[in-house]
Image 1 (cartoon, rainbow, N blue to C red):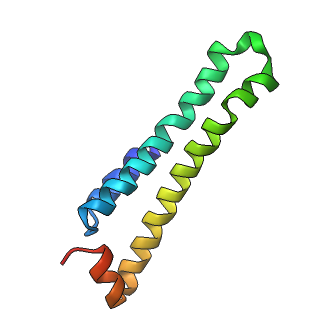
Image 2 (cartoon, helix red, strand yellow):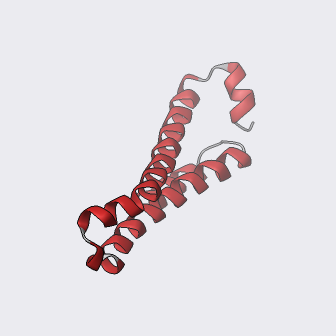
Length: 96
């Protein structure tokens, strides 16, 4: 649910479309994949045991959380950057 909220927030910013697309894919993919990997671990790996299930989805869980956190951090950094309005960054990241 947080990923959808962040994508809506992202849609209302004045970022260039390329940056909007990159950040929305990062937050969407991370926010969607992380719960799915734990669902996968809980449903299909019950007979393997807790530790082996965690070990099997470890890389997927870490990559999904990393995507989500990097996307959220970049979005909030760009919002703060828009608030202070440095000229070079404004030309590079934001539309007129």
